[in-house]
Amino acid sequence: MSDSQMVRVRIAPSPSGYLHVGTARTAIANYLFARHNKGRFLIRIEDTDAARSDPALVQPILDSLNWLGVAWDEDIVYQSARLGVYREYAEAILRRGAGYRCFCSLDLLEKDRREAREQKRPLHYNRRCLKLTPEEIDRKLARGEEYAVRIRIPEGVTTFADMVSGELKRSNDEIEDFVIARSDGSATYNLAVVVDDHDMGITHVIRGNDHITNTFKQLHIYRALDFTAPAFAHIPLLLRPDKRKVSKRLGDKDVGEYRQEGILPEALFNFLSLLGWSPKTNREIYTPHELVEIFTPDNFNVSNAIFDEEKLEAVNREHIAKKTDHELAVMVAPLLVEAGFTTKYWLETRWEYLRSVIRLLRQRVRRITDFVNLGSYFFDFDYSYDPAADEKNFTPEAAELLSDLADRFAGLAAFTAPAAESVLNELAEERGLKRAKLIHPVRLAVSGVPGGPGLFEMMELLTGPVIVERLIKAVEYIKKKPS
Ligand code: GLU
Image (tube, rainbow, N blue to C red; front, side, top):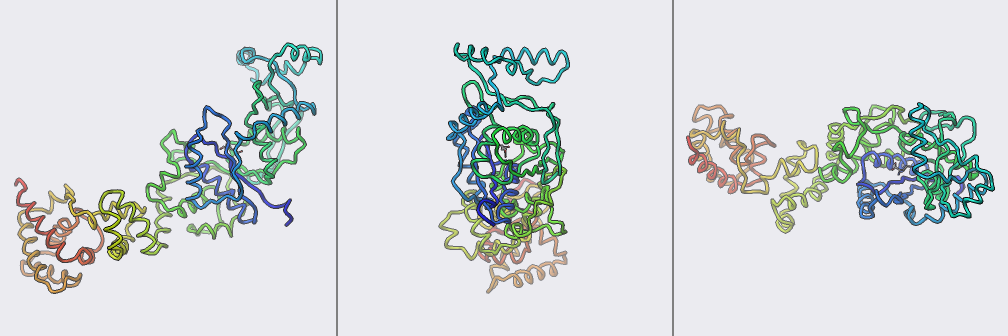
């Protein structure tokens, strides 16, 4: 493939918020397409709307992309650095006669729209300024009147072959002579996008299907500038389970929040890839590398995709299962420190202990943060008891049993899981009790919670002295309880 045919795609986030899952999904689709075709994936920051964009948001967006493993190939393009370029292209459109100056004031345009609304006509610009004679234009220019530049939409039909939906068509009557440069000389969104995509050598524009209307407009700018238009793929939008579009406003999370909440980057990558795109197999779990191999734009669905967080958790669980205990320990350690259960130093000197905790809990977690939520008692020696379990299991009779067990455990030469289990079984037998009568209060005493990994493995890991101390502490606690 020669360099001029090399696939070049991009995403163009505006820094008006953090990296939204919808934008992340578009980024992944572009990235997979680029990598699969041995092409380039680029980033452009659409930061010309000073009122809406905040330079401080660029870095978090890039951080989230990096975290997801969506790496870009060339220097990032900032639209704010290209204002002069857009101006030149707006002038070129005027010179070529493909656009015209519009001197209408905002008030006048508003009045036009009001009348159109009253008469139930389309709200399109009425082409008043297209009818100006060259003399009238010269007079206005000589008077220093301000003007915007509008593109002139010819009669006819605009069509393009969308890579997802096939041929799309729109009658040009439905496309107004839209403004490409404002009276202050600044470019409007559609002009800037076309100029940038052209100058960046973009071969395929892969973006959300909410941009189809923009594409119909942008095709007229390509024509007006005699640029070759790229191929377009309008991919389905992400919807919430209630079928509304995923949106920050509705409380939907950005990529950074999923990261915070213990989702693995490869899980989010996997999950987002399969939203609106299908490998056409029943398999659901893929590494990013595997997705690069199998990706083809033919398999995009036309209908919008539902972002179901439970599904994401299930995918996350599968990716957690692929990690080694050590890899998980590296991720969990800082979370334990952050939660205040332990210190970096404590963990560094007890790495094997942390790995054993991971080994015990890994079957039960759906998120990395679950290791902290489900296993805090491995690190926190000052926990309280689950109230419902306390009420049910911490009876005076239990106190007596726990006290007896503490003595027997203390007498064990080697506190192993099988040894602890035999001691408990013996006590149950002597007293003619079901094992459960002992197991529930013991679990509550040594962990503070009613459920968890295998009780005896957990006790062995916590070690005999800790278990004895925790049992005695529970006994004292029960004795002090108001009866
Ligand atoms: N800034 C636009 C968006 O985030 C980019 C659209 C495009 O890809 O052209 O939706």
